[in-house]
Length: 209
Image (cartoon, rainbow, N blue to C red; front, side):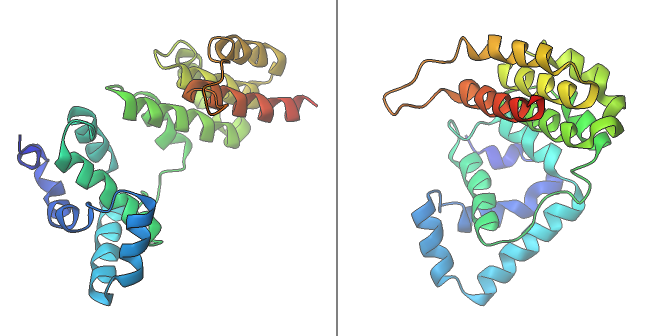
């Protein structure tokens, strides 16, 4: 399936660069490419990053990758790894207003798949940094404590602890989530939820101490 035909028209500027640079998917491939990249290629990557950053296309882009996962569609993978190359090259492609209470509240209300769940988890984690300035997000964070993705629940509890207090209650809630993900794999690592819960617990334990 040619998923590029499903890409929103205002994102078509990504197709050419994705086909050109998105084949570099692993760290060593990206490093090798950047070592030999021409000035023209670096300028092209910088231009894509700046256009993406200023146009606010991140939500459309994320929604597209949710519909056409990179594990199922090579062209989606090319789009995804294009931004891996851009990031490794040091070019900023994030929306200038990405780290605001309003932006994170919007992310908490976006549903549709794993990537958007990741966005919700990140939004909750960043909201914690705003403290009382994020009081408007408290109702959304309380709803997020029942999110279908446990990573979101972990960081919603973390954010509420930082914004409202009652740290011990939220530590207990995160420990309860962690208890189902505390088994180590063959590499002595927790699964993704376990790692997120462990990180949140460490941060909150430091606060409580």
